[in-house]
Length: 182
Ligand code: HEC
Picture 1 (spheres, protein in one colour):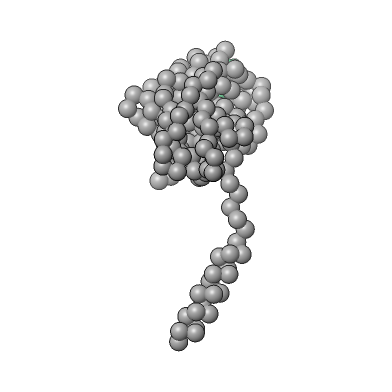
Picture 2 (cartoon, rainbow, N blue to C red; picture 1 turned 90 degrees about the vertical axis):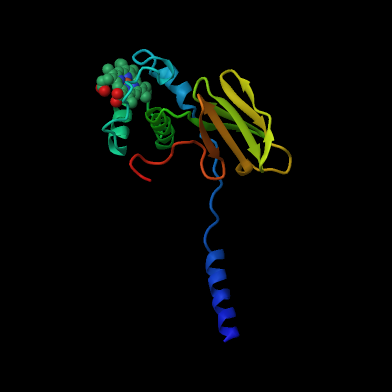
């Protein structure tokens, strides 16, 4: 009896081990607000400030991506990769929810760079302990302590008492949850 249970656990254990390891999350290398202010500004006010108060009403994922493809390719005449479009869409979802957005946009050695909604304040923890985050040319930077990995970092963007948390072990951008999903 005990032997059979042990064998069962062994088989189960090796099946789990055989699954390919999940690839760690990487920086987006794309800053959506910076992109918007460079490519969309001549028709839209900076920082996405010009959208109607009910922006998001009647939107689902299909409409969001349709609008963004039309705006990028036809209006602004820039081609984005699928990954870049996803990051831009995540910022749009934050605008719809009127929540601060934050994205991990770059890595240089132990230095991680973030873009957050204009006016938000960014704080961070590594393995649960607070680390210093400094503002630099509109972006936010922190040094990951020795012995930690990017996946240990959790950043929080706060604006007018609304906070958005981003754990780098699961995503490089906040608001990745598709519209209409729970
Ligand atoms: C040539 C002018 C022009 C440029 C450039 C432009 N847009 Fe637009 N955009 C518009 C106009 C006009 C509307 C409103 C009418 C409509 O929805 O088509 C609009 C609407 C939108 C909407 C929908 C807003 C709503 O209320 O639902 C989004 C999202 C959007 N633009 C994103 C972008 C992004 C992102 C860029 C840059 C890549 C961009 N736009 C560049 C003219 C422009």
